[in-house]
Structure formats: C-alpha cells, structure tokens
Image 1 (cartoon, rainbow, N blue to C red):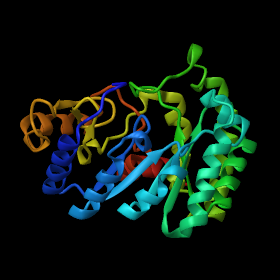
Image 2: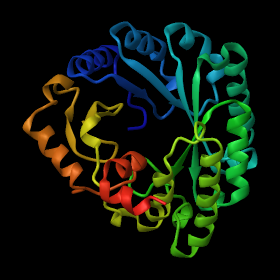
Image 3: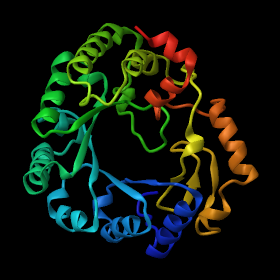
Length: 295
C-alpha cells in the first residue's frame, strides 16, 4: 500500500457514510498521517459532522503541524513510542529521531497544556522487556502528563515487520523476563491507575498473548470497527475480512450486508489468522477470561 493515497472526495464520502452508519470515532494513522496534505481538512470535517478524530503518529513532524490541527479541532493524539533515547533510535534505525519526537511532545504541552490528550503506545518487544525500560517509558509519560499503553509486538499484522530472524518476537525462554515486566506494570497500575490504560486482568493476560501467539483464542469484537486502507481497501479489521474497495463502491454499500455479517461472525469465533488487536477489551468482554486473569 506504499505510495497509495485516497482522494479528498473518497475520504469525504467515507466520513459521511461512517456518520450515517452510527460510527463516531475515527482513527487516522499510517504510514504517517502528518504527511497527508489533507489531514487538517479531514480533522475539520470530522468535527463539522460530529465525528471524533484521533491521530496516531510518530510525532517527528508534529511541531510543524500542531497549530493548524489544533485550530481544526484535533484534541486527541496517540504516539508510537519505542523506548527512550537510544532504544527509540535503535528501533527506528534513525539516529536523532528520539530527540525530535520528544521535542514535538514538549511543544504540544507548552503551547496547549492539557487541552490535548496524548497517549504513548510503548512497544513491548524482546529488546525492551526489562524493568528499566518500562520504568523509563513510564517516567517519560509522567513527565509530559500522557497516558501509557503497552502495545505487544505483533505476529500477524501484514504491515508489521518482525525483524531479522523474528528478533522482536518472544520465545518460551523469555517467560521470566516477561513476568518481571508484568509484575512491575501491575505495581504501576495500582499506584497510578489513571496513567496505565490497561485493567489488571488485561495486564495479567499479556504473557499468554506474547507466548501463545495465534493459539490465544479470545472472542474478537472487530465487528464494531471498519478498517480503510490508503488504496481503498475496506476490511472488518486490521488483518483480514475484506469487504470491498472504495474505488468500486461506497462504504455505505459494504456495511450491514451478508458479507459484513459473515465476517463479523467469523471474527467473533476467531476464525481468522488471529491477532492481539484490542486484547485488553477482548479479555474484559469474555467472562471466562476475566475469571482466569483476575487476582
């Protein structure tokens, strides 16, 4: 999908159809959405028709766009966060990126205070699976008054690269290190419940998500979302269940059809490649899982 970009007319139709269908949250992510020339127009139109936009970004060029986005009505940001300092630069393989990311976050706080809600999505991978890395990420979040969400390294997203020899992925021998991080995260949740986005049950389930991979079967709520790709592809979720393409038909003609209903049933049954998208929400909606991971 690299190099693809939907026209403003397609985007406007999608937003209109989403509003008509009862969708109320719109997450704009990429690639890097801050590079899209129509991003400000998209945010403004979302606000105009009563949708709530959120931008997920690496924040590298956020300083140069925050003024226009704020004026358009953007108040919600989530930021891909791969560690503090050298950890961030090592993951992105772009020296100096960590400083630019932090400078942008500081700029948003300096200009607009807490009127902009920011969340750091810290990637838990083998290289950051230790108490020190978690603590550094938490202190960074506290410094800029953001919430902290732990994003577990993916194993089935088509656009996620696992690194040479799947070096980012966890193995059975990592269980002890995972438990150390999970126990520390539970402690932080108890001390700072509003900062840590996950429930205790969701936190306790993380080792199983990380080590069982596609064998971790928890009913999925993807039926409540729609994913739209830059090439016009429309799917039920990030991974699978294609419903159509915007270059062939409008979004409204793909929703609540037999194909949409069948995809929703298959997602709930986890009849798919499986992933851990929405893991915490899935745990809390499944009575069996809540019982299993409750203290």
